[in-house]
Image (cartoon, rainbow, N blue to C red; front, side):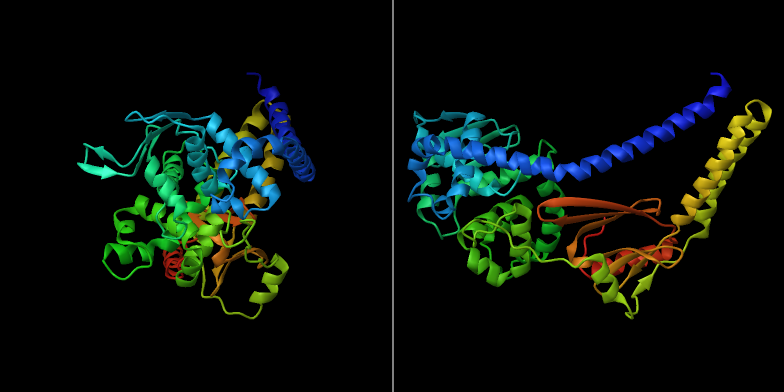
Length: 431
């Protein structure tokens, strides 16, 4: 390659980077309007088909499916639209001479839609086949009778008799339909197969906060849940879902934090008629800055000068190579090297952040003392520290959306380990 072309290639790459930022800015500017337009179109569509949906599907749910009955009319239409899509993407088959009827398909699908009603990705696409037995069925693998099974290969097996009883008895905390759909939802995430993005990111936080209740069951201590929830973490989540929908008030009273975060995880609250979640209102950055004024930090990370020197050594090597090449054959490359070197040196300077831990907050502070970002600890899904000790990845959740922010720092290993330990003591998920 002609060395004289190198400066132009570098300039082109920089230009493309700036164009990318510009297009991203336009996306942020207009995405709200586009989403609002999509919502209006969907509402118009749902309203136009509501009559046929209610005639075809609603008659099987009215006064029979308590979750559906309490929904406002607009939410009922959404429920039926989703139900129709779920049925259209599944194969239903009867076992032991059971003939699968439209009613059976609708009640099976309603179990899934109830569970995933708050999620964007609701179809459970990995699970393509629903097998229905007349009643409980025998499984040779573990020599036991089952009411339901969820196979990672994409098959959900249900007892029709027990499925009906699960919805006829609305508050006994036993619901085989919800139980197996909860297995399907969790498996789809664990297998990383077309899972709901919000659910996938938030599940770790819910599991972390629910761990003490799971350990109660494991250690045979008193628990709000029935003993079967302690078999393993898969059963624990499925049983939690049954209690969430069928013993909502007791669940919230006994385990308020676990209940609240399950509401956030599934993006719905069964105690509200429209299933909406009333999230905690978070403070703005300005409010948080006022909040921490005068508060003594619990810990401030020390800068690792070894890590700083390594980064500047790499910069110096690249800068020197380009400069020498510029003197030898391409003078324009010399100017690119000088300007690029200065810019990257300034960038590294601005990466000299320190992480400051307060009683209820974590802040990222610049080398000049400015607070770049403050996080309420209970609002954070997780903190992830890179192995090299130079990047903090923070996952946040608000209003059904996941936000990921990255911060660079150069912290020494000792204070970084102490920071992680103190965060864990505060029951914050650290990865």
